Image (cartoon, rainbow, N blue to C red; front, side, top):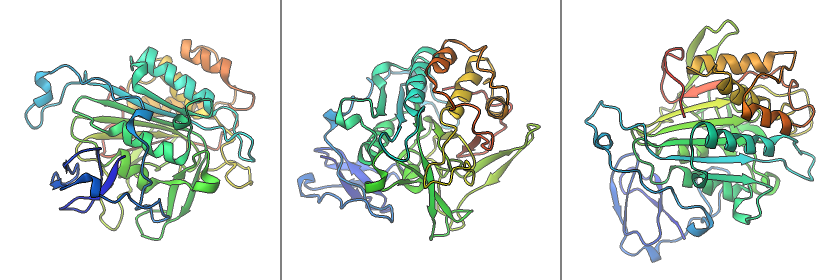
Length: 374
C-alpha cells in the first residue's frame, strides 16, 4: 500500500512507494528518509480542503508502466538542450455516462473509445500504456470512481522521464465550487465529477494540478483533453489563451494572487478544454450541464484527421469552427472521425453552440508557430 509523507524541506505531500526507505521531492528535490516505511500512518480520507488522499490500492490493480525507453544520449542533454522526443507514451482516458442517474450522458464512453483509437493508430501509443476508466470496464479498479480516477492520475505521471509524452482525457460532467483561498481569478474552483460524485464528492482543480501538473520534470510533455463544462482552467495552469473569432489571441495571466506556483517542475503542460469556466448549457438541472457531449472530443479528432492541427493555434481555431458550425458537417474525416460518427448518439453534436474550446498552458508561447504533437 502506498503511504503519504511530507517532504522534509518544503512539506509537499509525497506518495511513498511500497518498501521505499527514501523519496526525492519533485518540487524542491530534497531527499526525505524514512526509517521504517511500515511505521508510516496511512493518510486520512480526502477532505473538502483537498489536502488528504485515500490510501490507494495495490499496484497490481493497474497496468504496469511501459518498459523504460532505450538509453539515449539525449536523455542526459546539457541544460538548455531538448531531450529526446522518442520517449515513452502513456495515457489515462476516462469516459463517464452516469448511468441510471438524473445526470446521465450519452456520448462519453464513445468519446473514450475514439480517443483510445486515435492515440493507438495515429500517435502510436502502445495499447498496454493506456489506462481506460469507463463504466463498461469489468475490472472494478478501472471503473471511473473518485478513488480510481485519483489513482489513475497518479499512475500517469509516476516515474516519468525526459522524452515522455503523457495524455489525460476526461469526458463527463464538470462543475464549480466557491473558492475561499483567493487563488482563483473568478472566485471559483473548477471540478471533475467522477461517477460517484454524489456520495464521494468531486475532484477539485487544485488536486488535479498537484497530481499531474506540478510533478512534471523537464523534458516531459502532458496534454490534457477535457470534454466537460466549466473546464476552461480545470488543470489550474498559469496562462489561458484568449482567442477571438478572427483568430487573434492574447495570453491571460491566471497565476494566483497568493503567489502559489501552479506550473510544472520544468516540464510542459498544455490543456484543451470544452468551454470556458463560466460556460454552461441552458439546462437548469443540477450538474446536467453538458448537453454537447462528444462535440469537443469530436472537434479535436476531426482537426487532427483533416490536417488542421499543424500548430496549437490552428488546432484551437479548427475546433472552435467545428463546434460553431450550424451545418453539422460530419463527413470528410478519416477513419477515426468515421468511427466517431458511427458511435455518436443523436443530439450529441451541434447542441453546444454556446461553448468555446479553450487552451491553457504552464507557459506562454506563439500558438501559430509551435507545432502540435502528442
